[in-house]
Length: 160
Image (cartoon, rainbow, N blue to C red; front, side, top):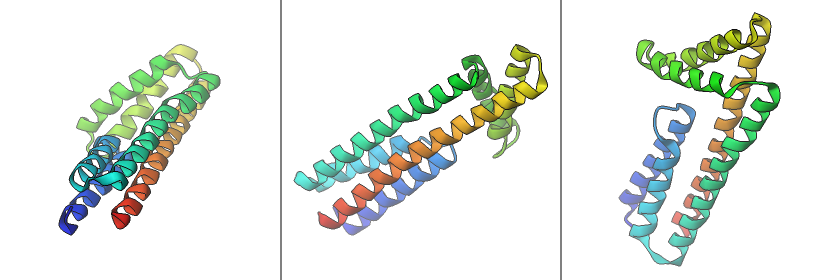
């Protein structure tokens, strides 16, 4: 692959990393796709090894991202219904209040659902805080996997 092609792949990976931090873009899919294109265009054992290791890291972080924070939220008593309502109101909020609406809608959705379920404002807010911690942990796990995959790609791009 040409140097210009590798720069484009690197930029797509960068956009993917930003997509993990700002959950508007499909970050992991962009990173996976960029590394896959790079491996296909570069060819050879090194490129395909980089692709395989990067894919394994992205898949592993994806599995951990959904299991570990989910278990922590369940242990804290956050209902799945609250997370679903938070996600729905987050999507609505994204369109109603540009940029910050996703966050505001999620918090509002979780809080209202927990308030309806628990009937006590303080307990509902504690559950909302646990949900926010779970979402933050989930994002950090996904970002760690993506950064490791990106690091493997950089090493492979230099070596190939």
